[in-house]
Image (cartoon, rainbow, N blue to C red; front, side, top):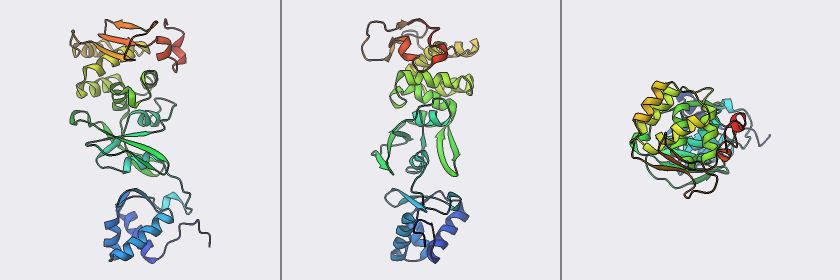
Length: 281
């Protein structure tokens, strides 16, 4: 018999069929023990299902269930985003990983950032580094469950992804990658939805960066939306986008948004080739 096949014994089959019937994507060791009727048998079934590729261990006593649709063979590989999304509840995969999923950028992060309600230690699951980012109540919204190649994962919506990336450039590849993400949003994200998400997050720095980046990538927003954005920014507020200190050739102060841009236009647009040559350095 091919040891790589996901064959099942009677108790294992009962467990798998029960989870499949319930539509479960995340299960606990206690669920398996309850199904088979004893702790010893439950632990054995759990070990076998992990070995055969029906379960992937996430954290202590918590597993991702890989249903029959995953195929007859234990391929030993899983979708990193689905794994990250399953570790903690409630949570959502956001920032750079979500931007990549939604097609806002062609880059993929090496570390997947997951928004949570409280602090958790980072983990590496099946070789995938996962960082948990505690998010305050007013910013914990704008996500839904997506089907990722047969597995369910909760990710931020496209408009919220844009707002999150502008809010935390450090979690989205830095200023130039955030410019690329805002540029990518032009083709499939509605400006009104992006603005609504940004306003709901109640961050002046976010609003200032958003206004500047929208102008930088020539994203044509209706004047009504631009006026809403400007009116939400206190006139006396000054924030910095880019490096901590200004360098020669940096954009400097942008009066329209009250923003000090410590970066060169050419650097910010390095991954936006269609408009790179049209902007002054």
